Length: 455
Image: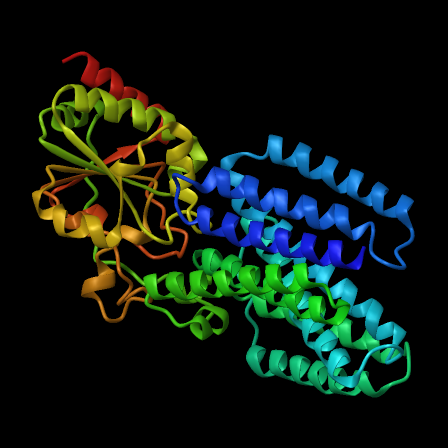
């Protein structure tokens, strides 16, 4: 049976890797999720036959309860709340790895070498930080925590908490079994995860979620070594590597280091209130905007979180189809950190049926903006702010942006005159060739559709 279990774990790991590979493309992402899910099913079922396994009733009950909660919440979650759901579920993965570490550390060195116990400590530390940090990220995205929390000497205090936890963790592999030090260790690490995430601004949440995903994968891989479980080792390593690469790519897309994201407190109210270079904002009515778009030769749509809030993706695609019937070339431009999680806008557009070949990333679309007749910005803010190119004093200076300001005309759909998620004023809105369409995105796009239909 041992050989069958190992072969099954190898099969599960192969399905994880193939599934993750297919998730890298929107065309095959759905199949990739199914493949990875099949791998998890194989790994879960075969674990029941592991030598010495017991508590079958509790395991089955836990799986039934967890699966029911996941199924119901997955069916009911709105696309606007998907980022916080991902943060929450990611935290659960880190918490599971931390729980494994806690159990093994409470058992002590019985049956484990000092090196294995050391891996349990490291995995427990990383998994616990991911758990508590992801919960804070969830609370921020859900609006339960409405501002970044910064206090004097915050970073030295955080470092002292982490340092104390590391010192205690270094002692744990050498104690016999149990002990109050295990509880103190996890309490300190939980606290550090909370303290590390509280000052991080909302604009950095996509990077933070990706980073905690990488930490969860690494923690699972380390605990796989502790349990001598090949499936956990391979799956955790793959997820950790993929999450690390994605985190680096997103940080690069913001022209920020990961250290700056974690310790810079970007986007908290005092620092982010730096003024933009905006002139007077000039409104336009939907009829005039519809005429402008209908008689264009090229239109580029730039979606942002506002589109997700209004659930306007279906109306946007309806408008695009109407324009294409009139001979207008329509493309969609996606910034790597648009929305509240990696790939947020891509998922929304795919849900609306937008063909993948009409969706372009930043590097592909930016050279085209000087030839674009109308750039329609719907709910995006910081990722189209030209101060990132022009104002060295801006907190987002150097961040690659979509060059919508280089289009011949810019239409911006926005609820009001407030700032973006980072709290920075947008100089694009005051440009001479920019016009503002104020109101709910779905309602405003519906008016644009009617305006085009009347022509």
